[in-house]
Image (cartoon, rainbow, N blue to C red; front, side):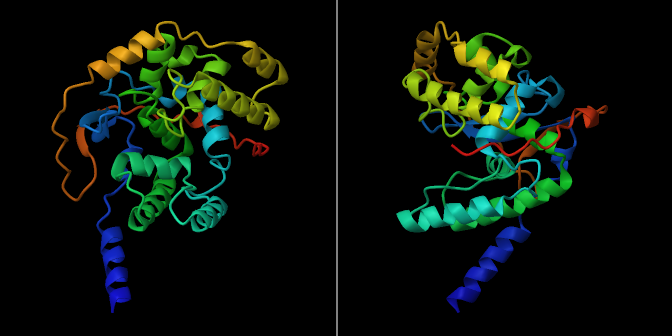
Amino acid sequence: MSALLLAAWVGVSILTLPSVAVLAKRGVSIVITVKDWERKDHPFVVGPRNPRWTPYGVLPPALKKAVVASEDANFYTHEGVDYEAIREAIKTDLRKGKFVRGGSTITQQVAKNLYLTREKTLIRKVKEFVLARRMDDALSKSRILELYLNVVELGPMVYGVGHAAQYYFGKHPSALTVRECAFLASMLPGPKVYNPYRKMDRVMKRSDRILRRMVAARMISREEYDAARTEVPNLAGLARKVEKTLETPPPEEKPPEEAPGGGPVVIDTFTAASPEPGSEEETAPESPDTE
């Protein structure tokens, strides 16, 4: 009986998931809730209404490649979910006796960031799985990557590469070097664990691994790799900036109310949405060698 109730609960949870169709409209802005490093909630705008929003066509190719190399090597070939990665994650979790390895793709991370909480439960993973499959059906790979790079956490209340590029390097994302792209990608497992302010050596070592994966997968040339390896990111003023951010985090704000039917709140739709990049859609890179 309990198994039937559990199945019914899971079924209802899936049936009541919000639609992902609105995400296909590039002119749409939505509001989600993010947390600062004190775990306080803050509204965050995803879309053109965010002044730091960086459209797909403006994102540097090296950043897209660095993220795919570090987070989801099969991004361009799977259908939102990487079943082999899930199998490996399950093996690890069973061996450890707890949720340790998620096996999440970039698409699953977008689903989690936009629609779900970060609690490590089976029902959340099921929802993440279903939403990721729906996103892969409804959205182009370029759109999924655009959403991902504009909502990822890269520091204390630093969400999205538009903010991160300015915060760490004082420049627009389009001006990032290959090394700087790998540097930002190296923080994606979690900016608290890979925190350049506290653990610069750890961040640099991981960015070196990402660069090796990129050159092995022919995402960058040997010349680009050699140049990136000799470059030391200029993080002048980082300590002062981080200390100031942590001392005076944004004020706690009331999270946005949930939209009818669930999901983020749509706050605006431009009448002339940006066209699908099309020609800018990247071809599937070769899977990088494992370390």
